[in-house]
Length: 320
Image 1 (cartoon, rainbow, N blue to C red):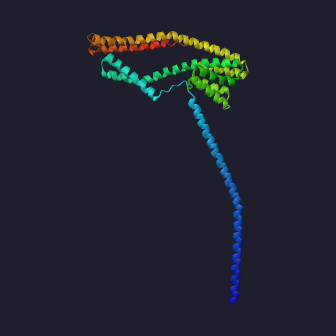
Image 2 (image 1 turned 30 degrees about the vertical axis):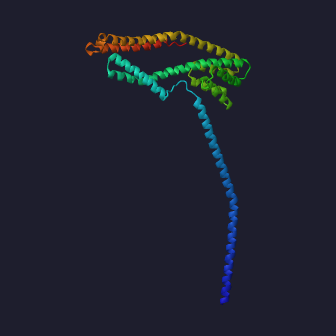
Image 3 (image 1 turned 90 degrees about the vertical axis):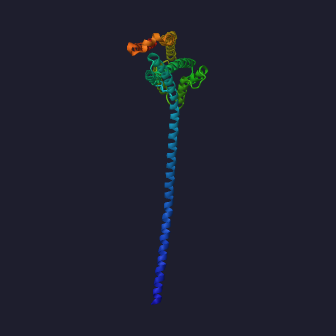
């Protein structure tokens, strides 16, 4: 009986071992079958990850290039003063206004109040600098379209003509930071990147905020799209714009002397008051006493002086 029980136990152990063996083999086969699938999934994920990284890199690179290009673009309708420029103009204007305030009222408080107005002067000067930059761009643009007209008349294509303009401009303006050179380099770069020349010119004309450049761009785009005689149209447009700019320059030269005389006449009363103050102080003393209403008359004189300067500059602002 005991021997039979021993055999039964051995048989059961053997069956368990065989079952465990088959179970292990089956599990191993499942794992081996699953490994290629997992490797394929992992490989696919790696490829997808690499594509995403590459796409992200290209987007960043493109964004960087766009920022570099945008960094060269200037909005000519806006002039932003640097901190150094703002401080310089504010200090100079504040010192001058404080001097005028003390000269007219002989009061430190009046000098401080008028000197504080110097903080508003950079805003006025910003408009002046903006107009100067536009005038500079206008003169440079006249040379550019003259070169473009000559290149087109010589038989060059539009794209090659725009490249030739940059070469000619470097002969006239050796500085690579010249406004018109930078603008035409941006136009050529956009054309090389596959952008149409119409869009590149249109962007430049919109940023220029100048009627002559906008008119030239409109004529150029219309002629190119309708298939007109581009060479002849550009030549005539170039001549008209050049003549207009020449007339504006002649008027500016004629008026410049009168502007200078107007500024001298505006400063002359200040010089006369300063002369009387230090040469005949008793003669001018009643103008600083409230009992004789002297400061009231000084205020009226100062207001007339400011009004005459403003009105004189406005009269001299002749637009063609």
